[in-house]
Length: 230
Image (cartoon, rainbow, N blue to C red; front, side, top):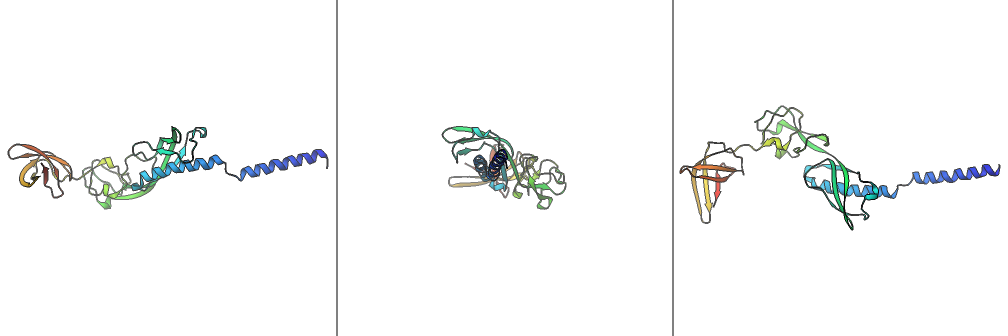
């Protein structure tokens, strides 16, 4: 074999070994990226733990602009957004911001049958679905107790996600109802009668016109009494 051939084989062998070594190793920045993304995911998951949602974070900011320490202090943006582009504050020696894309999946509630507007919703009328949340409306209801017993403020079609803002509490008192009014304070408790001037649910405030013509405000109790504390 000629000297030229032996040199070509040697060079090929060396480059091949380098290629194999690179292919079988994980770049250090890749592991760091994963750790930082997971740190953000952990905080997002904790924020929405009551909803049972799992997040996946992709960091969009170029690697050269990431913080230098391994476990920076993170501050998530205010609000309850579940998905989309977000800006996360990170701090090592100095504070900076990372642009991230957040995806999420979880279980949410939908109408299993048509629910007319103004109808109180029962447990049999709703069911769950699971999957990605990014293309669903904001404000999804994630807990059945948010829904059952509430009144639909708009009609829901079968399969339509239940949105919390499209529900209202069932009225315990309606306009014109005669109600018992309990005036209580330090060492006294007086029961009287009055008429409701608006609709109100349990724990909501309602204005009452007393027999004397005086208008007072109190909170609606579970039994329908209006409690006024002096």
